[in-house]
Length: 263
Length: 331
Image (cartoon, rainbow over all chains, first blue to last red; front, side, top):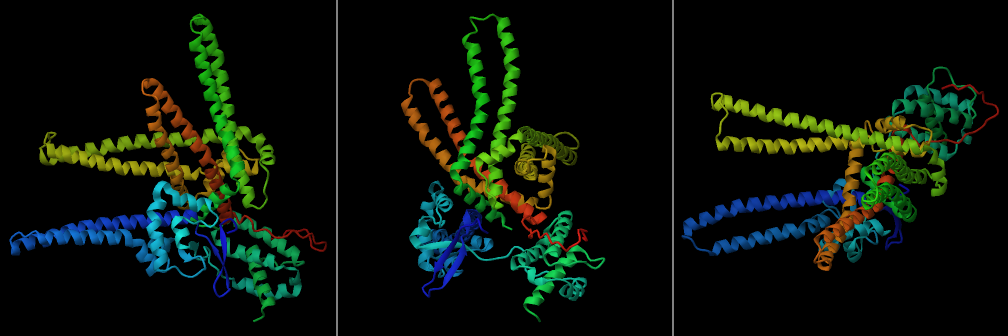
């Protein structure tokens, strides 16, 4: 994630936190999702109210004999409801879900305050108030793209940041085969694991995590290449017959882990 | 490994951090595209201007010499333009691999691939045009067949075999036709997008590895996007969404200039037309110059991410030349 904008924050308790900023890509989709939900809810509200108030109106006509008072009340309620949904959507969700709207939740991004604390009602309100201004000529999107802290006008005023919640795309856990585990004692006897640096171990682990996503051909090639390099590093002279490169790498992973933290 | 949204963000950040050099290359690329147009215009002006002085034979000879020359120029300029746009992708990829290059050095390395870029461009054009034509044909046949089918069935059921002239019936048929049309348009756009996504990375392998040909590069792009086609389409769609603000600015400038122009040129409508055409072309070219590096950077990031995913790019251990290890490869 080296190329995504990072930010370090010092909380009031002097704790340093590092976050990855949400980025224009995620924020654009989140906004699109929110606008779709928002527009659809407004449409449903209009249709629902039109139907309901028409029924109430005609019912009232029947019992009161055509007084106009109720219609004005209904129109007032209608305007109020639309206003609440129109303005309140972002404020409501960002307050209720601590800085997330449905779109942001889907994309796993979140609004936080500049000091790292969760965003609340004041922040959500200010952001929502400035939203129309940010939408003119896509000013907000340009500010997100061209400022290092990715702040649109609403973010400047409210003192907020939009960050990514950490989430690994790949599974951290992977299976080690029994054949590989059987190989571990042999490796521990015959090779020098002190020569394997933590960086090397990280790469072996990364390979084992990522291999299920790789193309079979490329996986076979990469596993052979890595196994040969590992063998050279740990000064292993002979590998028992029938051991595949993948089993070997799994065994090295397991053996190294046991060496560092014996069970 | 990045999500689709983060790939688009990375492309923007990559572009922003190399704004000047990428823009310069993009400008060069666009200028190469303009050269043949300029020469074509000059040639036409020449012929029109001197048509009285020369007889018809000399004009014919001029055409016979000028047309092939111009075509050669066109091919050369397109190759140059595509090389320059691919150069941005190479620079981006090298940056991602943590092996940055200067534009000058990178240009030198890919200069010999000039014709491969041209072939790749032609290949891409051919594939997309064939897809376009194929879809259009299928679409027209499908629409006519279905509408005729419906008409025949309806005629059989309600009118005892004769085609009805009932307005409701024709109305239903029209609505059905429009609905089918909309569905077909979506299928059509989806199909073209699908092919575009499969060939999205076409020029990147040529720019990055050099020693490959256009067909092989097509194979690379095809294979890399094979199981990740939805991922790539998502990347392209998000990128298009992120492009919108820049287009609003371009459109905004056009919209601002238009009334000024109308106020300025009040008498001559031809002049007004020429001027507005010229200005909208310039705005379009400028928009293209600004957006090209973004798309080329996006290709670089997508290529980088897909190769990390599918080939384990970047998983590299130290090479140790151990003196006591046998040279036999066990694995």
